[in-house]
Image (cartoon, rainbow, N blue to C red; front, side):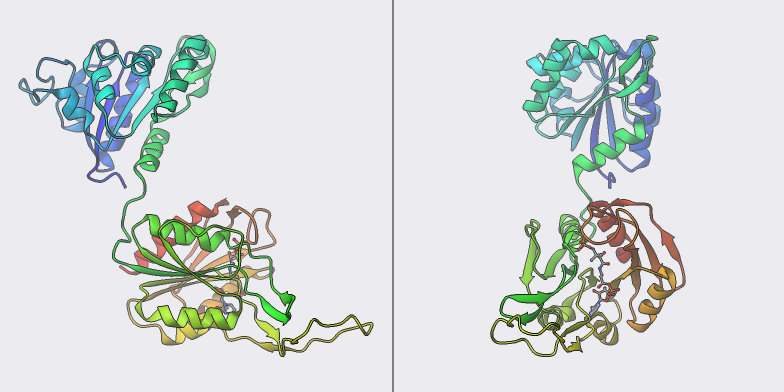
Length: 403
Ligand code: PMT
């Protein structure tokens, strides 16, 4: 996700400056091109050569004079402007002093000038004594920075280097890397692919005012469509009625019944590279939908149901080489055995099995708890996670299956 990204890392004078070395190393290992600016204070804690060695780039320390590190003298003429053009500028650790300068637009050294000149995202990771952090002046500066569109990763709580306990710990470097990745947005690794997603619970009419349906909210399918679009795919979402807005960049085809869903899916299937069937399709529908509202007459009412077409099974029969078919299984018992049977019977490449009896899993929730089941017998047990995050894990798996 960070491969090829240009990141400027500003390091200021805090005891946590040593953690910035790990941050620089993690970012470089993730494929980012990292350029470090150190303030005079930061150099009291860590030597520039450490960052130069970890990033392979000269470290910049002076607004007016060249470079420090393996590159030797003769850096960019206007280093603050050059370094400000990064995909992201992160200040870690960020002292109360740099926050105050940035909040007030001061630019009296290389880092503060680069922050002021940065046209892109800037992330501050404060680290300081708890009382300095809680001081209303620091809090006002943080609020001002947020108001100006800068990002702040809140510090952790705990025992601080100064011996006191409270807020002010620099978040761990992997946490900072994750935040940077989030701010830079997902890689466009699905660009050029057509992804077809189904979502929601179909409605099978009984009469003009009643229908048979299920508890699907559509959240899982919509999260998949949104994630695929964010990763650059061309996405069509065939959706049964839900209360959710259509995600940005997604084309929605609105349907009600399983039969309508089948027709819409059939239309788009031939050009699909990846199909993900998260919809909860009714297995049966009323044999006849009454033309008028059914009257409350007898003590019992018998409704004859007939089988709906199995959309996923039809896709499995017509799948072409190169197309990846992802099915779901919503089970209340024998999760693995039932899911494996569906994988075989419907000829899918990947089956996402949710035990919908588990808390936080399945219908309606914002989270889900699933196992990914592959044709070669592999089973990946995923922990409980947000549907928005799971969507990316499913897309990662489907993308990997395309080779
Ligand atoms: O919408 P949410 O509230 O976010 O809930 C998410 C979910 C629980 C609906 C989702 O995670 C899920 O499990 N979707 C599949 C639900 C389902 O219908 O499971 P199933 O085991 O009955 O069907 C297996 C697969 O066959 C599914 O991919 C389903 O889309 C497909 N199917 C089923 C019947 C049918 N007639 N046609 C189908 O295509």
